[in-house]
Length: 419
Image (cartoon, rainbow, N blue to C red; front, top):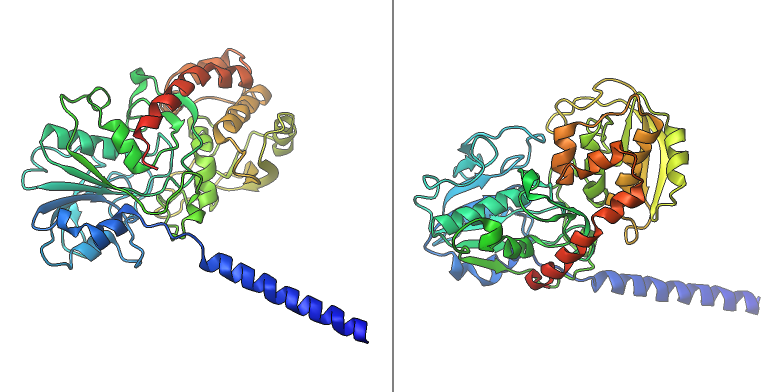
C-alpha cells in the first residue's frame, strides 16, 4: 500500500510539473507585432495630417482583431483619401483572377481604386491628392503571388510621382530562410513574375520592397522615398504559426498554413492538365485528374524518397465554390487524386518535389499529359522547364540547371534583409 501511494504521488507531482511547464511555455510564447501594429502604437506621427492612399486588403488585421483601415479611419488627424485594392479585392472575397472594379468600401465609405483590372499600377490621376502611400498586405512567400507585383508597381509609381511610400512589414509565412527554385528570366516578366526573383524568395514584404527599390530593378531614374515599419520579435526561422498571430487566408485558395508551405511548388500544377485541387476544400494539397492512376503515380514518386512528405491515394470531384473556385479544371468530373501531406516542413522542398511530380506525370502518361504552355512558362519564369521535360531530362538535371543563378541571388539578397 505504501509503495502504491508513493507511485500515486510520483505520478501526481509529475503531472503538475509537466502541466506547469506546458502552461509556462504557452504563456512565454513570443508575440510578433506586425508593422501595422507598430505604426498604430508608436508611429502615428508619420501619417497624421496627410492625405493617405492605402494599398491593402482583408489581411491587414491588427492584434486587436480590427482592420488597419477601420482603425485609422476613426482616429483624429488621420485622413484616408483613397484605398487601392489588389487581386481578390479590399475585403478578400473575390475568386482568383476575377477582375476587380472601382467601388466604395462598405464599412468606411472610402473610395476604392482597383489595381486588379485594366489598371494595375497607380496612375498620376489616382495619386493626384495623395501625400503618402501605405502598403499593408500579407504575402505568401512565392514569386507568382500577385500581391508582391502590386507592391512593385506601387513603389514604381511612388518613384515616378515623387510620393513617399510606407511599407508595413508582415511575416513571410513559410519562413525567411528557405530560398528555392529557378530565377525569373526577364523575357518572361508578367504579373505573376514581376522581376528577377526565385520562386521561393525567403523574404518579408519589407525586404522585398528594399530589393525592388533599386532603379535597375524598378526601371526608374531614382529609387522611391521608401520607409519600412519593421515587425517586432520576428525571426527568420519562424513559420506563421510561430508568430502568435491569427491566420487569415491571404487568398481564397490558401486556407491554411500547410497550403502555403506546398504552394511554391504545387502552384506549378496550374501549368499542366492536372487539377491543382481548386474546386475542393484542399487546393494544392489534393491534386489529380481522370486519366491518372493514383497508386501508380505514388509508387513512382516513392522511388525518389522525397524528404518530409507523404502521399496517399484519394479521389475528388472539383465543383464550383462561390468566392473560391469559379471554373475549376475537370469541373464535375471524378478525378483520381493524390493527397499530399507534409510530415516535416523543415526538410520538405516544394519546388524540387513538384519537378519530380510533373516529370512523373509526363513519364507515365505521355499520351494524355500536356502543358498549358503560357501558364507553365510564366509560373516557372522561363520556357526551360517545359522544354527540359519534353526533351527527356531527369528531375535532377532540371534541379541542377538553376542552382548557379539561385546561389548568385542568395548572395545579393543578403544586403536587403532586415532581420
